[in-house]
Length: 156
Image 1 (spheres, rainbow, N blue to C red):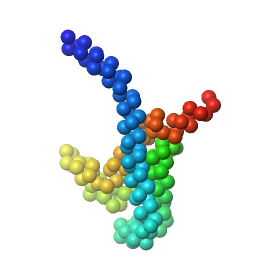
Image 2 (image 1 turned 90 degrees about the vertical axis):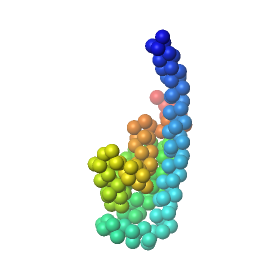
Image 3 (image 1 turned 90 degrees about the horizontal axis):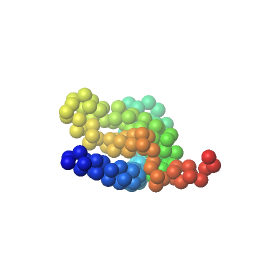
Image 4 (image 1 turned 30 degrees about the vertical axis):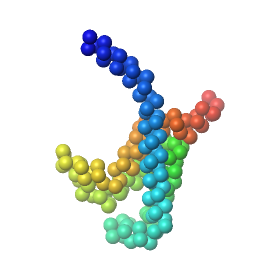
């Protein structure tokens, strides 16, 4: 009896989950892509203040690194939001977020070694940006994306 119920639940899951996956990826991409755009834009608009912050963290070539981080966040965020270039774009975004952990959130990063108290790592500002880019990197942008639309129009 239990095996029959589990089998029915599994069949229902297999029908529903793929369409929810696309919606889930879309929601993540839109929300965090837009947030990336805002943070990148903010770095450009407050360039000198951000450069000063980078200097206080002893980041070499602070002006160049502000420009690179802001560009990655602004343009990478826009591309993630659209689901365009989703097999390449997450890589520099993930790298930027890892650098943010190493430079601006080193104690939060170290909390990963303090299992089960990894809350500081998860609650740090870069976490959701990193998670979103990892999700898109691993699972693609989903069917509700520019990449998917372009793949349908491209000749085989």
